[in-house]
Image (cartoon, rainbow, N blue to C red; front, side, top):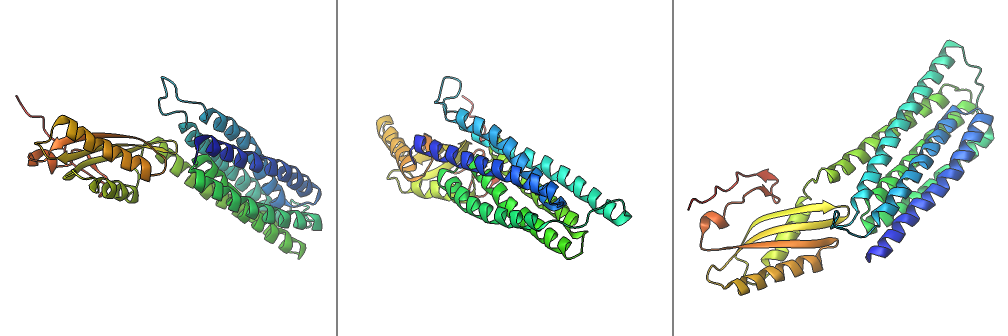
Length: 322
């Protein structure tokens, strides 16, 4: 996908979600208060939080589209991962606030301190409308996120999916509350908060893994190995490292070639490896290839650091003394 097109689609997904959350936050909060529904009010607070971090994510998304410069040779795409961290932090904070408020509501009902008498029918319709809107947003946002490989958009998709469950919990709470089981409504708010908390933790786990430069998985490692082995002249693959820069990848590959080849011939093989990886792996931005003579078994058969195919760590190769 062309970079400009990718950025436009990502920003569109953020803005559509932000607009929908603004509308839902206002409607759910007002109806939650007027319709006396703690569960819908809790969901409204969740949507209000969605608006707050949606604005932050929108700013980060625009910053991520800045072109490369001397200090950021691979661009500013890491801003997308930082935006995902912001989403996760907001989601967790919201979950804690909703849980505390819901548990307090259950306690007041059980102790007789609350005058809650059940939610109005308007609250039920708003909750059902929220479910329908969030299902559509979830499907569309995840589709954009998968095609753009944008962690911030994928985080927003997870939050939209999270809102489906929270709206369903609110719907169940309101329905049972109108049937006379008043404690179900605030209890549903507590269940909503736990679902929100789990999603926030998952978003943080995935986004921080990218920031910590976690090695890509075995599937990518095998793809790099298979493509590299297909290049004529490559005798053995000594080492593979791949690093993420936002959605993009930079690979460092060390291969073994015939030791009697000239430097020019070895460089030609390295160039072929670079081209085949960039042409066949989406979001591969740059490949650095180093080659060793195949006649030296000490060099060509001992991986020096991380073996991506197994995930194991090996001892570094000792430097030769001269």
